[in-house]
Amino acid sequence: AQRVTQPEKLLSVFKGAPVELKCNYSYSGSPELFWYVQYSRQRLQLLLRHISRESIKGFTADLNKGETSFHLKKPFAQEEDSAMYYCALRNYGGSQGNLIFGKGTKLSVKP
Amino acid sequence: GAVVSQHPSRVICKSGTSVKIECRSLDFQATTMFWYRQFPKQSLMLMATSNEGSKATYEQGVEKDKFLINHASLTLSTLTVTSAHPEDSSFYICSAGPRRTEFQETQYFGPGTRLLVL
Image (cartoon, rainbow over all chains, first blue to last red; front, top):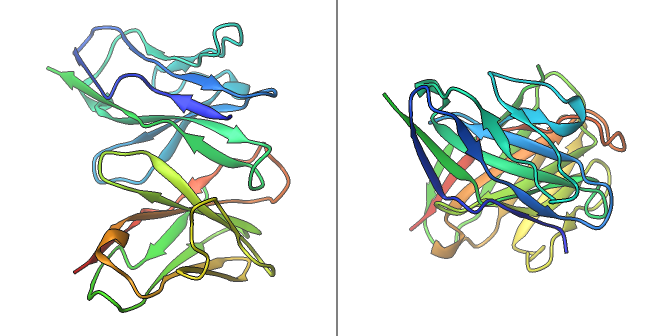
C-alpha cells in the first residue's frame, strides 16, 4: 500500500543548527515525492519536489530509492523556518494523481 | 503563481443543517480538484476527487450522500456537508492543478475552511 511516514511529530533545534526532517515512503512504482510547508495561519504550499532537484530557502531533499526515503535537510536553520512540514507522495494509481500526505513534522527553531 | 480560494473560511452551524463550501481556481482552469479533510494535529486525508462535468470519485469510507460534490465549471467546485453532525467538525481543504493528466503539475491549495458543528 502507498504510505508516507514522518516519524517525528516535533523537531526542535536552535538557530544555526542543521536540521533534517525524515520521510519514508512505501510505493510500488516509481515515486514522485514532495515537501509541503505550512507556516502559521497560512495555507499549505509547495516547498520542493524531487524531480526538480532544486534548493528552496536553503532546503534540499534527495530521493533515496534504496532506503525509500526523502529526507528534508537544511544546514543552518533559521527562526523563520518554524512551520509544519508535510512529506507527500503522488498517487499515480489513485484518483488522478492525488497526494498522499505524511502526518507532518512541526519544526521549531529557537533563537 | 496560481491561486485557489475557498469560501467561507470559517463556518459554525447547528447539527442537522447543511453547509456548502466553495473552492475556486482564480487564474487557471482546473478540470480536477481534490477535497481533503484535516483533523486537529493530524495529516490531510483525501476525501474525494472532483471532476468537471462528471461525478466525483470518493475515497473509501467517505459517504457520497453526506459529502456532495459539484464541479460545475472549470474554476469552481463545491462541497456540501449535508445534515452536519458534530463529528463532521474539521478543517476542509481543497486543491487544484492546472491540467488533468499532466502529473508534473503542481497542486495549489486553498486556505481551508474551518467547520464547527454545534
